[in-house]
Image (cartoon, rainbow, N blue to C red; front, side, top):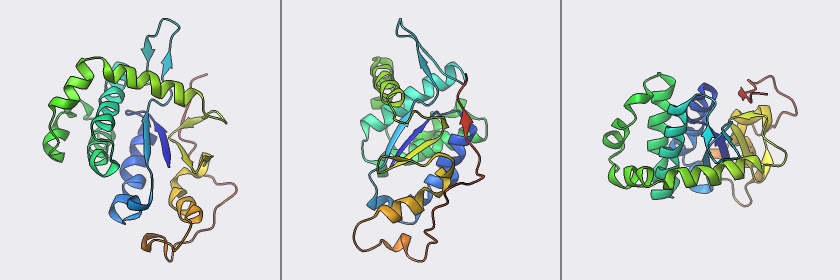
Length: 195
């Protein structure tokens, strides 16, 4: 499962906090290779400068989240920190993001060093290239992909796609789930790209 998102997008934050977090509570996360890609609808200019849809704070937090993912590649370790920032984003308190170190028990220094060294920016440039190379291109964020298949409007139903794609005995979290996948939904279209 790959999630292409940006830190200050309300649709992305809502997905992380209200939907994606479920797989960590119900145990499905142990059966999923989760890849979080915090870049979203950002842009890289020919001179290499970056701009983000929701401003400089978003660019900084995208890089901070990229550093957290790099320092702790295991989703079970980094997701609580990502969740913390996205919860702060939902409540418009993202300026308090450093409190997530205390809340999660993760040490701050490796992340601060990653960010201050410029490595976070390098990670963001890689995420930009990956996001911009998506086929088909992403139309909005969050853009959720399961086994290479973009879910489009049906992204909040990602667990059904995971369960349908699962080979072998279904994990407990999949049992009893309605696994019908809608061809067309009226779900929110997420956060549109700027034209």
